[in-house]
Figure: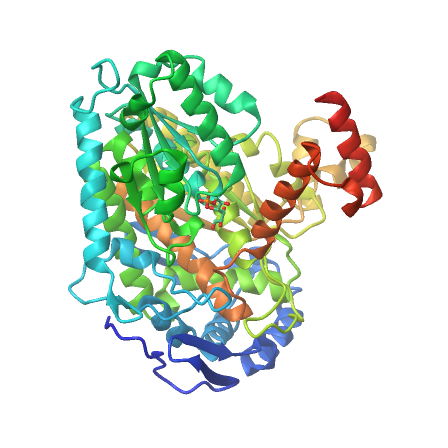
Length: 575
Ligand code: G6Q
């Protein structure tokens, strides 16, 4: 990896045109539908549409072996997909035709890959462990990254060891992270996933501005032993600031309004020093990061402070190490054995050629219960876009709806639709076989359930099998024809299985980075900017406008009749 701010394009595109808008912004104008592989895939979709995966397994004893790859402790079995060698060849050719290699390299070296905000995209620098220099606009960023991390670690150690004292000299027992979106979901998901390693203060997360969230959280806490981490990249987010003010008041109420106590109980994680100090948090208690870290990609930065507090710097280092390992795999592995590329291109196959509109994330480990929510933000906020990087409207589908819940619970709920519903919904089954404290007999049942589901989705059950089953059970012959259609499973429903030997900070880091890069690859093929979020910004703008109206500040006439009527109801009720 090398520094510099010239676009790093290592080969000429076969289609489309490289445009360097400035010497800092790389823009490759590439309509994927005009590539040859796209045309070939459209034809293959028709051809392969009638082949059932059950047949594919029957005629090919090597299928499971061939469509399986392992990297960074993660085994990906993608054999239960509606693919054959031709499809895979064309999918990888599509990635290549969309200049994946050049775009990936541009991101890793700090080009302004986020073209609508003219920013670099360098969450990978936060976990970089190599010896090269990484520059943004000529500035070496790694010394600052390391310095902030060291400060975070030192702070986390002081809190964890009991050296950091609250206003009456007691040590900290509870930490409350106040943040939302990217300043909440990542650390929350990781803290849950690594709960079995928790060895520091209890860590709580407050995100919703509904007072029920903070009230319920603070109810059982002692102000003297509670530390607040106010996490906000911009430090302007209304939900976070409202909760932070409430927390501050809760503390001040306990100490008779003594403002000097705030320094002992509040720290901030932000890029906005000015706003942090204006809020009343000492700049010495602030941990910074940079505009080239997107919110949903920020858990590797100081935004990961709650993780460091909960499981300690060593485990946070291991998390970074696992992510770096995946970064290196993504950067260097050939496309055909590249986990993020495979996951991404299989997703493209379903979205753009077989009509899938959603994708399920089904982790089987309870500790990964927030992973679907985290990946929902990562994927939908990144690739939920309708225009190409050059501003042209896309003429093809982009990011699917990402949803899910722990798979074992899902089996007793939403899996019905996966098995017999009318939509094609690919599933990612994620299973870590071991974790600190696991009970082997439970894990056997868990693994058996996971594998049984993917097998059943793939294989299905035909009418003859149902008839034989019902006859064996003794159902009267005349009742069988009516019962059959309800018990038939069409099968041919695709899934990936991601198997981790063990859920550790390291393997979790690799897993998260795997999905980050999967999202990146899809964004490249769809030619969208995966790193802005104007839809989220719109929500922030609209909310503050209406809040002013609710407070009676401005005229509600600016809103439509429905919104005005709703505003009137609230004014009446909250009068
Ligand atoms: C993430 C998004 C969004 C953001 C939140 C919180 O990529 O931009 O989810 O993280 O809106 O923003 P702040 O961290 O600025 O409060």
